[in-house]
Image (tube, rainbow over all chains, first blue to last red):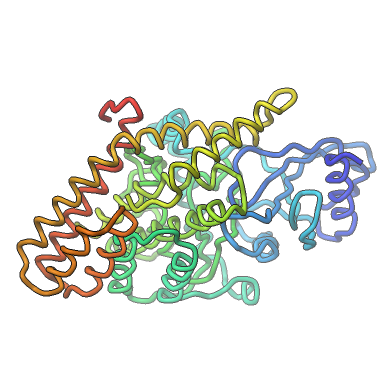
Length: 342
Length: 137
């Protein structure tokens, strides 16, 4: 059997073995195509034929062996499952295959296909499209902040046993421990930034669902509206202001070696976004706390990308994108120096 | 400057992608194309870095030496000697991390070292932005 045939057979077995809502009655996989992108997960779009002859598309999300982040795929699957009935634009999941050896190169789960495309803020045309939204009816900008406000208000009870609860210190520990484990060289700016962040313990707030990687690139946009919030692999229960800090990074405006958009997250004016968030959640946004979490967000990115660099350096993968991420570090280092007022 | 993966390791990675693309039958799919584009990007960024890095390292060392020379404390004197002997940027990073960890907060020398590192961070990003042709952003 061809590789594609084996993938189709594995996918069909997974779907037919599931009893989750929406899984349907699949009889044949007509096509499977790997999607561009995907660092810690590989994604495929599959065309499925049901018993009644109708066809539909679904997404196969795979955790490859050489992933940049050792995050648990089952946790991500269960997060989607727990959020299915919340007022959030999250796709439904249909099945989960835990086996490490599959024709997709790792465990996978299947989920609903949502129309739309994720903006890549490092591409000028995508930034221009988002700026046009901001200068126009602001539908994407409004959806973007409203989805964030909604996810921060999801009751955390149903997430008990699904997601880890992490306070400020535990969040810093998580990324620093990972960084120390995988770093290839010693970077004095990164080390100083960890010390700076640890000196700025925010006043605690009630724990909430944190997406952990909330940015426009993890939202699908369809005809000028956000149709899905995806990539929940870094979600946890903790301080929701992490998401605000993370999306406040210059990197998330599309900055790489040159400045990106003037808009926060390439989506909206900073003060407008914070004001709307405050209005939707009733929680004041402390700009200094956001600054602390912006630095932690940059440190998180450095830690995660350092995993890819380490795996590449050790010969664990020949995926050149892992090596490429090493060129992201200078910009993040510059951002950290700026945040610390050096 | 404090960057992982040496030039030879990156060049070999680019070569692997080129070989794979050359051996591919038919057009590249989306995933293969993204790898090929990443390899192109790595090549350009590496060329930009190679063009600028010697100058950035020299100037960073000069600024650090100036800061340390103005401080007579034993820690500063020892660090100055260690920096002079550090054979490469990786070794320099080790010395600076140890120095900053031992300096009080706040401290004039700490601020001066941070200033030198800030200059280095800005210069490195500017060099990458200028591209292998060296055209300022």
